[in-house]
Length: 227
Image (cartoon, rainbow, N blue to C red; front, side, top):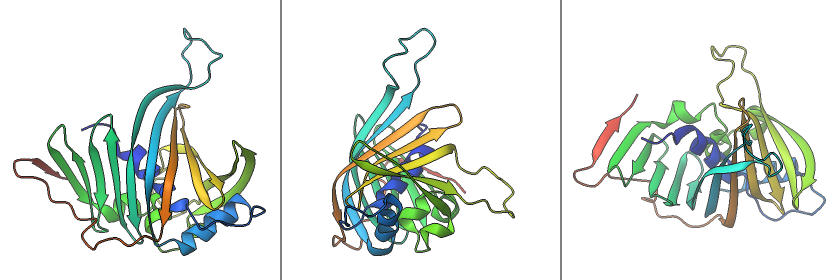
């Protein structure tokens, strides 16, 4: 199974940060909070890139290098339901109906199933799937304006009772907002690697069929169940 889970969990999280168009003067954090309050469903397209800094033997003047790129379509419904459908360069789906999380890999003909609750509760995915206040989990810090977006840094709040003080694989989470919609999400880990997710064609509060978030592996598929 490809090393897909952690990048997608957080990549998916940024989908939640869309909202109705707001006044141009609103801060990025205001737009972010408005979306979390008002959006119930959404769908759109995504491009996800994994970037890295140039190595010592590579040109240093060309910035970050793209080492992997995927693209596809997403759908979500609050609380706890989403489809993250990678279509290129391979077909892979990440689906949850609120109780279980399924990773379907068409090339491997394999479905990996795990409980959704613990996997999502303490991550940025809570922005997308939860009903609680965004400020309950993160401190929002307004940053610079660049590339036509107002950037917001999300700083996870520390839980004194948590055994693991560093649950997230990323040291920096930033969202670029424009007119109430997210245009980009940047995720930086401790080694300097970057995941960049850009979103497009976002439709808010769309009607979705009740079975949109159910998935049944085809006959003959390998099914792995993880606790």
